[in-house]
Amino acid sequence: MSSPDEIKALAQRFFDCVEAGDIDGLVDCYAPDAEIWHNTDELIQGPQDNRKVLAGMVTRIVDRLYDDRRVEIFPGGFVQQHVLRGTRVQDGVRVHLPACVICAVANGKITRLDEYFDSARVADFRKYA
Image (cartoon, rainbow, N blue to C red; front, side, top):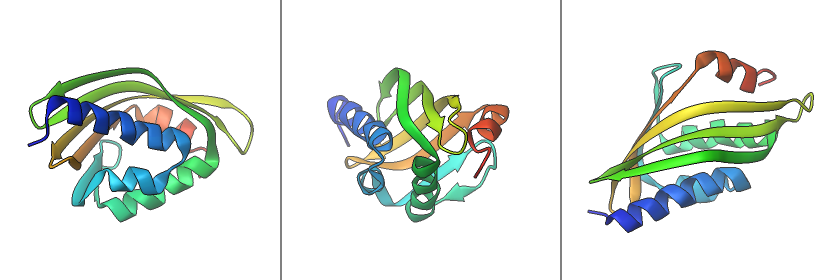
């Protein structure tokens, strides 16, 4: 089992990778058989499918920032609430996406990620996807 400090560092690294557009670093945070679920489509992805989604997002949204990060560690994982902010490349509009992410962690890797966000905000965020 990962210690609370290790879990907190993993959470920090995971979201820092998205901000930096480091998709390889982000995928490295996942266990090979990790499950990624979003409330807006209720589908489960694996790390490689998630890689494609995030690679597309980092090309469409620049100046990414996870603002107002609030992280709570629990035995075996973490919860983070944040607002993802950025600029849509297509039209230069600043966008933001409030979200809550719950992650299960084992052996220093994310084994399950459940992400909850407002579907109306997702539509704005993905307007030109």
